[in-house]
Image (cartoon, rainbow over all chains, first blue to last red; front, side, top):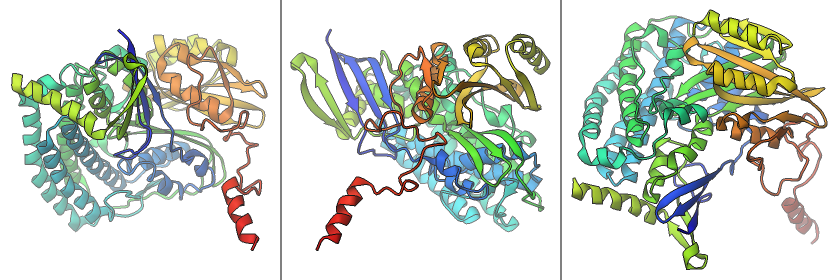
Amino acid sequence: MKKTVIPIGPFHPIQEEPEFFQLTVEGEHVVDVDVRISYNHRGIERLCQDLTYDQIPFLLARICGICSASHPMAFCQAGEDLCGVEVPLRGQHLRTLICELERIHSHLLWVGLAGHFIGYNTVFMWAWRYREPVLDALEATIGNRNNYENFCIGGCRRDIPQEKLPDLIKIMDEIQGPIEMLTKAVLDDPVLKVRLGGVGILTEEDARRWCVTGPTARGSNLDIDVRHDEPYASYDLLNWQVHYQSTGDVMAKAVVRLLETLESIKIIRQCIEQIEPGEIRAEVREMPEGEGVGHAEAPRGETFHYVCSDGTNYPIRYKVRAPTYVNLPSFKSSVVGQELADAMLTVAAMDPCYSCTERVLVVRKRLGNKKEMLDQKTLLKMSWDKTERIRRSV
Amino acid sequence: MTYEELLKQIEDRLGPMSERIFNRNRKRIYVDIPPEHSLKANRFVFEELKGRMTTATGRDTPGRIEVLYHYCFDKLSLVVTLRTWTEKPDCILDSVATIFPGALFIEREIQDILGVKFHNHPDPRRLILADDWPEGVYPLRRDFQTRKERNETPEFLRELTSEVTTP
């Protein structure tokens, strides 16, 4: 059969980042894929070299609007590794609280979008309805819905007033029931089981070879989570577990994320029970010469930061590795052999900071290299039609 | 594998080919590997010790360009960094992406920003630089100057200012 090349991207992203996929298809099946990134390189690593250690977290919070606690968190780990400072207990609990609130809102955002991609708009509206109280909680405690800017080397910049903490419990009570119901609805739905099961499988062996992290790895039977393996903040003081699935398909990744959301609520409750008044920040006098490495578990996977210092107030080399950077290339293993209608869903399952399928150029070689444009609507319709077919047959 | 067993493996197997093994603290180990052994060392850490490569960092120092491969040992909460280097101006290293595809992107990135050529890299296209970026200019080298530092006006601004000055 003749091969057809389908470029997806890089402009008009519907989410935030432009990325480019060139899919080669035979009939309806994908046989090869080429991923290109960095259409919007911001040079943050270089910019960090011109900022002091106190200024860097503010820039790092802007790497991603959704993981805006995880990147500064990894930076603080790297800085604390370098200068060997201990964070006071209340500071550690505050860090845990913010990181987990961030995880809940990020996972709910993903569940909503995934529901939208397969034509389950009720899931979309439900998930985003209950994401809103979490953002309100962040605004009430930290002051911002995103870009929290609360972390610095040695602890936290601002305290959450002790009398605000019961409000957080109230919000957790409000969202726990609906999220449990949503999880149950997704797990029990026969249509979803057929639609998402067996789609976009990333085997354990491939997951290891592509070095993937986060829910993408945990969906493929890799039991890795930085919060558990190298506990930072106050995760080692709390009672929680890592969820992972063995099948490696889109369903597994969805289940991991939903169960993790519930686990996050559990962590926040314990955190509020244990938190006691006290210092939130240890004083850092100077940054010694040397190197530091820090990593933290962002909602999408592990963020990894490396800092090299020459003893001055500025780092001489700063390196940031975001989770999508390692998860995205694994698309090459998970999409080959899939139907075109599932390609978008397979990308979405990794939760990349992306969905730029606004415009698609299809080159059909059978018709003498005739080019045709597919837009976002057509791609969504392909995915929705498949769900509808399954729904009728189940 | 326990922590002590892993340390012993690293000392026994990487020790002879490395210049220095530096335990910064319990969770961070740095191993300096000369470039000729870099491929062998990376293969050992990835395939036999089952390390998970998180990323690699390229760093321009006054005499040479260093490439640091960071490996995580998740269950032991340990990060092992293999540091290798290459002399300017040739800058050629063996590609680790021949062992596992997880290193494909990061080696292409280091090639773009620091000008290190990776020998036998399966896909040595540009990754993060634009297609019209000039050849042989590497933005993270120490001698790289921004347009501001060179006092140079971008082309589109030059046209604008020339229009303003001529009445």
